Image (cartoon, rainbow, N blue to C red; front, side):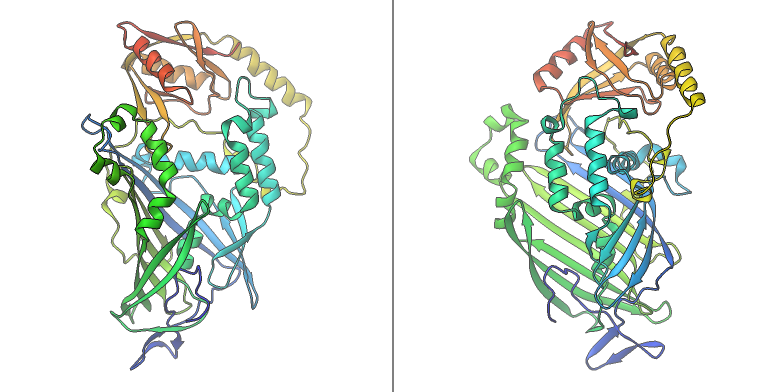
Length: 497
């Protein structure tokens, strides 16, 4: 094979001859990727992350955490020439039909809704190579401009009171990275594009069932090159369904990957200074070792070489922490054939005690890529009157005092930042739910001992009686937790004056 380079999917592509795959002494052929243009393909996507930090926690159950998401996305190949394809992805954070009863365990959907709002779009138009790998993105300037506006302003364009600047919060660094590599936007919003492309090749190739084929490439981690070995195997074919099933196993070089993760490992260890001080030499050496491996199963069409279904598990171990991500993609017009990991279908999960405060809904209007040449219309007089009336009504909403059931400081396994997790008593949870319903779209204040500790914009009702304070020094969080553990301790919540 030639020019495989970063195409980790280098493999095979069984070429269609007559109406059946060809079995010969040389192996089996499957067709190159030849998608129909102008046809929208819908995909059901399920994801989960499992984090285990048992090395660092003494409390039973405090170390394991699972976050899950379920999505319905759509892709259309708009055009194709001899060198590239134009592809449009339509994105949604809504739960697909059939799982609304389990909505509370799908916290990843809330995170994704906020991501779509931050990027300012619910659609991406990509240029890809003939395998379907993204290589360019339209509308990057508009997306970055929207992110800068979101960082600088609160809802309605009003400067965010008391908020840190974009530079102080690290947003400038994020935006700079997006400007340097716009494909990070694709990785954040539609990683499915890359996973599907893993099972597609622009040209027909031949493989034998059960025979492994190994390739290698380098991945960049913060300027460090990490060798990755990939092993492809054609597992089986199904002449009736006209599909081929392949597996991919990837492993990063242990020494190089460990070196690339040292800054993150050091950052995590600073979160547990007392524990880190007492580590033995063997424990310290073990913590500084990191590993990454990936396993993928792919079902590929014998008709057009497209990936119909994919299941991926990525495992990263570093600093006494294991992070495992699961992804399953299925084209909705085709039957499923791969077995789903239990975490994607379980009805009971140990989920983090975190409340995710969404940004303003991305459904409030068209995505920024859909209005690149459309200027917003000025508000009418009637609209101004309505807003004023709403503000007058808001002033009449009384503050509420909330009784605290528990207050604990813990480390997020996702961001490695500390947060104060507050659980209200059942009676106060009900009061807080009613308050948040009444002040939707308004900015509020939360006070502990008459001191304002947070000024959140209320984007949705908070139904579970849980509050998280983050972005504050750990010592301050511990001090607030001590104050809230005093019997009868209360939090005052009110509209921001």
